[in-house]
Length: 105
Image (cartoon, rainbow, N blue to C red):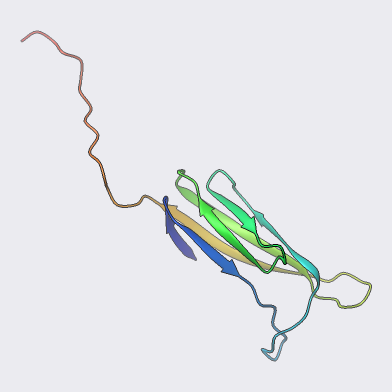
C-alpha cells in the first residue's frame, strides 16, 4: 500500500517479469485506470510503462490498476497489477478560526 498526503504526487513504473523473475515482454501498451479519480488522477507516459499519480484535495483510498497483454501471439492473456493508494491530510500550515453567533450576556 502506498500512502500519500493530499499535496503529493509520485511516479509509478512497471516492469513485467517472467515466472523466473526475468524481465519479460508484453504485447502492446499497458492500460492504466484509477478506481476513484476524485482522489487520484493519472498522467500515463507515452510508452505506457509509467504514470504520475497525482493526489487531489480529497482524502480517501483508491486503486491504480494496470492491465497488460502477456500473450505475445495473436491471443490476449490479461495480466493485472493493482496498487492500493491511501491519501491522508498533510501537516497543518494554517489555523482556521470559527466564531459562533454573538449573544447577550
